[in-house]
Length: 211
Image (cartoon, rainbow, N blue to C red; front, side):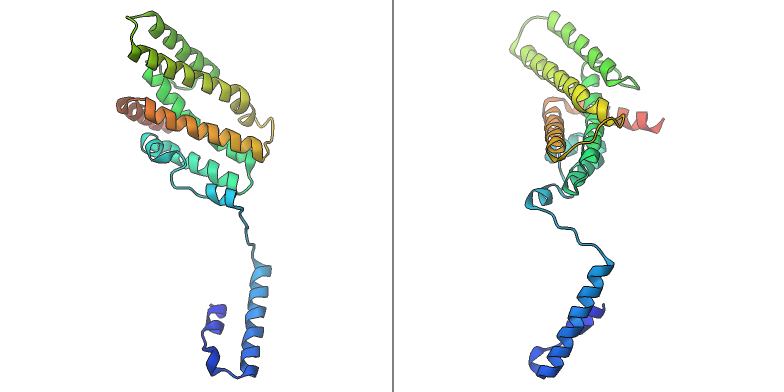
């Protein structure tokens, strides 16, 4: 407010002496304000991640509304240089996708470790592979399901097991890699799973987290 009151004048109505006094006051207020606060500079890359509204894209945001918070936090943490927190929130985001994948193959993801639920999913995928006639639709679904299960196994072994147990710290390159891959997987799940599966997964996550 002090700065605003100082700059509300018309330069052509001031003498050189008055202008000098006003500029001196502005300099003092700016200096005083800067010493009492902190200013954050973000690079263009960091600005891209800072508080994005839809880090999972429109489809991912619609499909996984309960994951939006962690997806946004993961992106914002990366912009602020909180790289280990980025990985942490990215793994939390993936919880919602893993729930949806489990439901799609008829499994219940309650409190199992990732290792166990991923094994259960892969077991169901193998059952699908062995039953029913061959078809292009079946092959497409098998490719999608097995690929998604393998990606979750990759995240488990490469990121989640470490960040959830405070075993490591991550740098910018590692954090951005985890973030990009996690968001990409969530968007593919949003595109590849049915609306019914996604809605059921959303409800299941709400119930599980309420316990």
